[in-house]
Amino acid sequence: MGLHVAVAGATGAVGREFLALLEQRAFPVGRLRLMASARSVGQRLSFGGEAIAVEELARASFAGVDVAFFSAGSAQKEEARRAAREGALVIDNSSAFRMDPDVPLVIPEVNAHTLRPGQRLIANPNCTTILLLMVLAPLERRVRLRRVVVSTYQAVSGTGASALAELDAQIEAERAGRPLTAQVYPKVIHANAIPFVSGFGPDGLTQEEWKVVKESRRILERPDLALSATCVRVPVRRAHSESVNLEFDRPVTPGEVRAWLAEAPGVRVWDDPARMAFPTPRDADGGDDVLVGRIRPDPGRPGAIDLWLTGDQLRKGAALNAVQIAEHVLVGARRPA
Image 1 (cartoon, rainbow, N blue to C red):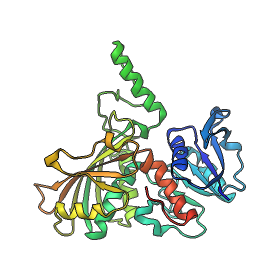
Image 2: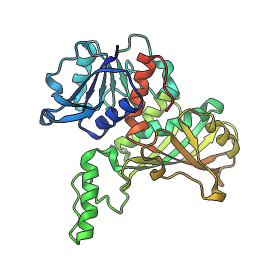
Image 3: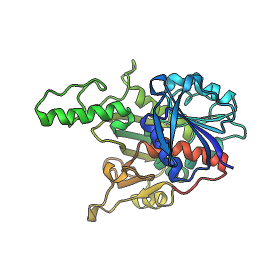
């Protein structure tokens, strides 16, 4: 007998990715319910050859639901809590619970040990953090990290369907010779790079940059980790990339890093400069692995390492990580990606 599954925020980009992944991974769905805001009620989405009507999240009951995947934004925090009280295992993709000490913040390949029997509410980390820590954690297990500096190149899918539509509209406007306008972002995103992802704080960091810092420290259990992030939005559709500089407690060679990452689940090393082999966002689009290349020594800091990574923001950066959490808790083991 299959599980009773709910997807909250089903009509959004991540919600639709949940549906695709549940089918692709043969997740044991016995009954599926789709939920969203009132304006989406009446829409029908396809799953398993069936068209399923969308319910209003605020009015839905979670009685009998085994697992609820939430991607309805942090504004739906109380709905997620309600679902957990009504007995569902809730895996929340928003920022609402990520720094709550009573709620595990989990990447299964990194810190599944933080999950406890009977846990009803689990937080999915920020997409940028997930991709980064898929690479940092296997290295931290070998040699303690001393300092991390990361610059991100984040796809518009991270903002949602409205941002993807705005990018398409700007491309069409330029082709037609019309003025380019921006509503979702503070600047035109087409053919541009915007060094801003969510609001600025009084210290000059954006909310996204602080998420990377705070979530990484929590997941790695390294509150002392020196980590600096600069987050940039680029006109790529759905795969984030990150340029990372790493310092360790002892000198580390590129060969060691390649070997350690080659053994890491969910990571694929793609690094052969002589053959122009390195990953790009197009290579990561639609895939489950985090791709790593350009692994090289830092010429200014002997023993430090520079590298490049890229991964699909909607999959491992969001929906896939949440589904893997559910598999770990409910099915008993992660399935191969």
